[in-house]
Length: 613
Image (cartoon, rainbow, N blue to C red; front, side, top):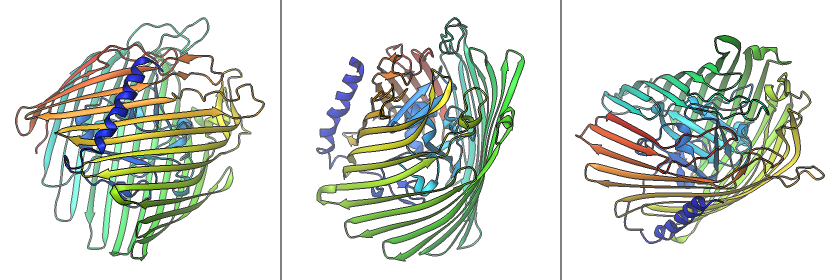
């Protein structure tokens, strides 16, 4: 681990004694979490390790992208292929990038062909809140949730009608604009937003055309990115018991690359709606439906090379029944269908559906909390898979809490895994996993800290073999790790610290790669956020660090560790107008998270924001 990462890790650890010394210095804010149980609970009551990033934190961070907002948070490894807007992969708790289920307003957005969520095309200007739940969640959500679930909620509106606006510019030809309006009345609420982001970019790849390393090309030009997004949402109470709401998000992009595919036009669209019936305090019925579309038109110069289009339709019915005081029983049915169009429709199979049935019990008995889930998924291609989980929590004196959980999960191979003409293997089996987690946490008045340790064992892990250029199935993988988190407000200073250790290993006996690290995961990551308001000014710093990683399964291509520092400043010109400035990668560190793909150096960003208070 490089010196910068060691220093950052020590800085994170040094903040922890403050957590126990500042009980009277600040007031904690209660946060609601939905994703861990599919029902609203207090964040501190979650048995699964989780965190919530709200709109206030998003705005305070001045993060230019969703990836930047998530980087370095507990359990998260992020890889990026060339800067803003370029392909990004997220590894949660050392599992594969397709092992994290991503939802937007409850709608699954992982693509049917690759299984990835196109995080780089989700603008922060459209996001109200992000919930991160670490650990297996297949017993609630079905396939894809081996590593956990990230749910993104689009902007919400409350109070009187009000508009908002932000304009900005920065290094590498960055120009940004976003705005919208909305409000709520006695029975309904509505809102709409539009956002635009355009950068001339950096030279994304330093590939080698002789060895075909990286992008296989040496094209030292700028690789730009443009994103235009729109959202629309609203809800209405038809009576005391009936509520309806709907959301829509559409993001169109233009992206330039190096190599054979050097330009693409992309579309990501999510539509969702739900009807909720709540006749009393002990019964709630929710019926929802959604559709996620991902499309790309790919080019080499002006030559069209083909299109990839995936569409997923989903529907769900969930009933929540309060069987007794402090006890909730939830049961439901989820249905989804994946469809491929365009050039991807040439795969051996271009459509499949899945039906899942689940039951969940949540109980509270004095200081004890219980959560038990069981689910069966009937996949059209791979048959039935049953998953389950059991969790227990106990509250102790002094604000302490103990948690323990065990869960199983599975993932069906994607269409690309099976049928890609260059790398697909039609005989691949579904991946299955078993995970255990132990946690201890303490929370006081305005401070908290937590430590979680876990182990995940995966059978039939699907990986890409760089030797054969085909997908392969690792017989066994084992991932062990620990996450230490803390937050405090002391003397007006907000401090948040996160330190993660992940040890992801190939454990296939007899394999040439036995005990190798799984590719592209750093063992150690750390993040430290410090913010302070001085009258009309607010200043902040974010430090991120990651240790070394290997870019290949054979562990022959080593990427060094790195550390970056970002500075931000905000000045309130008036009650409603603010000027914001940010310096990213202050010390101009040169590093890579994917071999041969560059990362931006020092960048500046200046913007002005209008937001009625």
